[in-house]
Amino acid sequence: MRIAIASDHAALALKAALYEWLLEEGHQVADLGPHDGDSVDYPDYGYQLAGVVADGTADRGIALCGSGIGISISVNRHPACRCALVGEPLSATLAREHNDANVLALGARLIGLDMAKACVSAFLQTEFAGGRHQRRVDKLSHPSAEARS
Image (tube, rainbow, N blue to C red):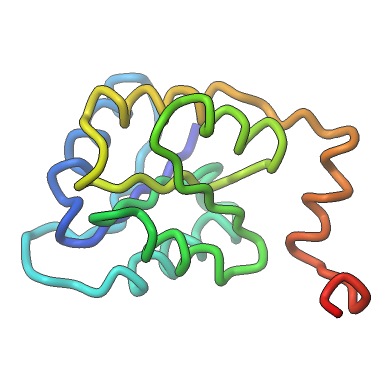
């Protein structure tokens, strides 16, 4: 699978560990940065990650920051992205199965490496169930006027 991974400075160590592990698991991984510990703005990396997932360069994305909240918000600004912030594998599974999430967000200050790997594994191994969920997922990218009122 082609996976893009990006973080801010707070999640640099988690990103590096997940990058190496994903390569060992046989995935093609694009590290979108940052590549040093200098302070950066998570929206810049979230927008970049959203772009490569949306245009099909990556099949899935992994977004990391200190809490996972900020970068997930920035990824979700792109209408083609469905980024789910999770802290355990069941949420990662349901995000894929029910919501067709194409980006997973994790908070580096809130989750350890083993739990992060468990979440990523669940995210990558779970297929979208489709069916009754498809209508709802379609509305995420194309909300109708009546749904917004």
